Amino acid sequence: MAKKISVDQLSSEIMSALDEYKKVTDEVVKTAVNSVSKETKAMAQAGSPVKSGGYQKGWAVKKTSEKTGQVSITVYNRTKPGLTHLLEKGHAKRGGGRVAGKPHIAPAEEYAVNELEAAIKRGLS
Image 1 (cartoon, rainbow, N blue to C red):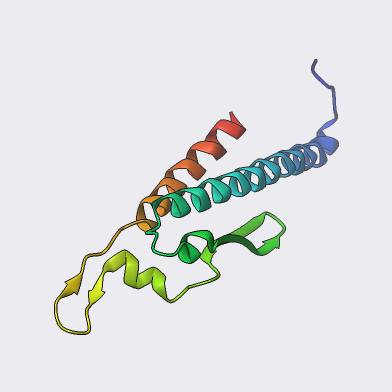
Image 2: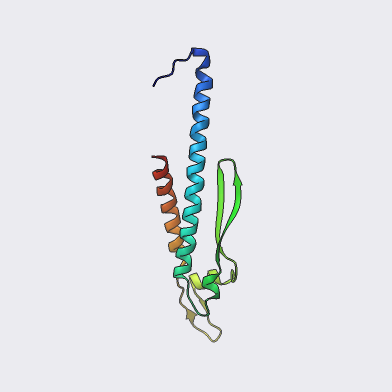
């Protein structure tokens, strides 16, 4: 139902509508980031190489920062962080030759970028 307002009240009504929209979008973005980060962690774990299992079990999600309208979450390996680059890209062996890389972080990252955008669009529509 339409609400009748005077010309003097127009700017305050527009600002209140924008504030309400901002609250809704902030909540949608926060929810999308949290769910996509958990899915990304699961994808990185599933694709991780397994020798003893310590590297695979070490994936974690950490909220880096949360400000008004901004959420930052990091998916990382807490047990063996130095191995991530070596296992993803490959490395030279001690006696010569190379160990082939096993990409498991890049596909998870690509999924996260695409899925986050889609989740935000779904939440706002």
